[in-house]
Length: 371
Image (tube, rainbow, N blue to C red):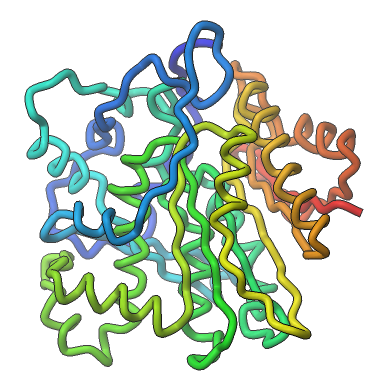
């Protein structure tokens, strides 16, 4: 497998869609994306002669203590109604703001140029700073069934692998703020996993804070003061404390994991599981993955990971399913959605096609479950 490559598809990186509140300089997505420091000896998938980054959990409060004093953001409008009748607005930290932070924190050591002209650099950067088209497809597919978040007899657990900007999980989080009863007795668990820990720190967590802050802004003088007219949010200790308190009061758990998909990775996610099922309730786990099968290495590793997670849920009598959004074919790389479907059926899964996009680059979304 080559060390780095670009899919070279128009629209892969959703950076110019939607509306941006920021008055920041207009930096192109390619030049704005500077990879975080990372050793090129690490690999997300099996590559001869290169070790894997170990599966690692990250404490939310420690991550919040490492955030900058403010972040700049834009708003992405996603059409989920099929004809523009219904949309969801999701905030994302601006990539130029990430770059500014990395430059400010550069201690003079060697920094990996990473993002530059490549969508993926194997063992260094697996695409986490980009918002991929298939992640928007997952948001569209999840929308009709979002009412499960308000089901008093369902205990939801969301696991997004290769989350990056985490648009599907952000959408579920935003919907839950409106749908879940404030006094719900069960925990909504959202597990966010990306190969690169810096992606979790620099974009995934900030996006969740932004989503919460925008949703609560109208009812919070603290948050009203924290927003500026330039499209920035001040991350004061008071704001971060309010975010932490809100999650606790609404029984929402955010968990962060980095490292390669592996049996150790699966064990770590399972060991982090919070006891939250009450009598008469049923736990439902939804595993999400967008653009995670772009090569044979990635496809095989992803498939074995999600099937291990589903099998463990089934063994405990829980309901589990996987939603995968991907291109029909990744030219020059070797992965394809059809190959994943074949792999999943070979492992005994029921596979259902939920969405097919035929305009432009062909994409699709499938649901997998165990009988």
